[in-house]
Image (cartoon, rainbow, N blue to C red; front, side, top):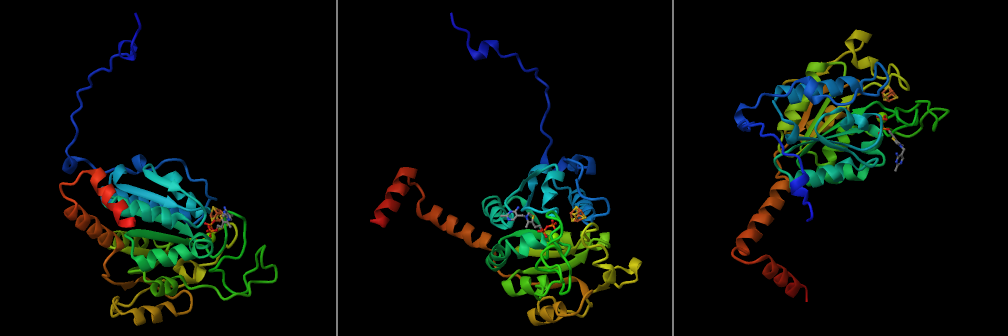
Length: 313
Ligand SMILES: Cc1ncc(C[n+]2csc(CCOP(=O)(O)OP(=O)(O)O)c2C)c(N)n1
Ligand code: SF4
Ligand SMILES: [Mg+2]
């Protein structure tokens, strides 16, 4: 007589655990959201961005299965390893295409992407432009340190002219890109700027970005203590610099005013530069699906397939 798997499997004790209704689930604690201990250098600005992301998840009572954290490659892009939730540490510069797929197929999730300045604007520059113009719902936080940190000090697209690095031993010669102008002109519908030295402001910007229905972009200055120490002192009041908010009179729906704000010399202003309510690609695609479902109602899957093949003849 043969023994079936069913016979030899140990009986699982009946734990009698009733599922907790959604509304009654308590929010996560920082301990429950934190995964591996970050491997960043002590003093790296990225620590505060991570701590504020935890705070955001805690504050808004977002559960593990409702948030996803996606990144490319770089010191900053190690981010998903440190978050106890779904996420991916993907290919250098390719966080946004991955995040786009998640966003379009799972409208119930909060999709966050974290990038470095090289990841977002160098190798991933084309994806940045297209995700912005398509207005795919997600939040991208670029942890801008004006340098390639992981690969130990090469010039990045945001490094200022004159910055000496392994790729520019006599000082960078190329005009740096301006992330805010880049985002506004590409078509991002939420564009904000913050800095890791002002935790309340980082949290405020990430929360406003998360609540925006569309592609929301936050540039967060995040100092690389190892390869570009002191880069952002001029924006830090504790180092003799100044942190100035976007004036209350600024009209966030005025694209030209936002562009003008983005033209100010460093340290410039911090806050929401631009916000627009253009329809998302998510809404457009959902409409196509709904229309097709209505048209094919009552048909079997094979009949829909057959119709599609007939159309292709
Ligand atoms: C296709 C590919 N090209 C190059 C690299 C090498 N590389 C890894 S991270 C990186 C740049 C990291 O800079 P940034 O995105 O600014 O992140 P940071 O480390 O400063 O946070 C480069 C060039 C790679 N991993 N994959
Ligand atoms: S090399 Fe720079 S960016 Fe990377 S962990 Fe160290 S301080 Fe942070
Ligand atoms: Mg960088």
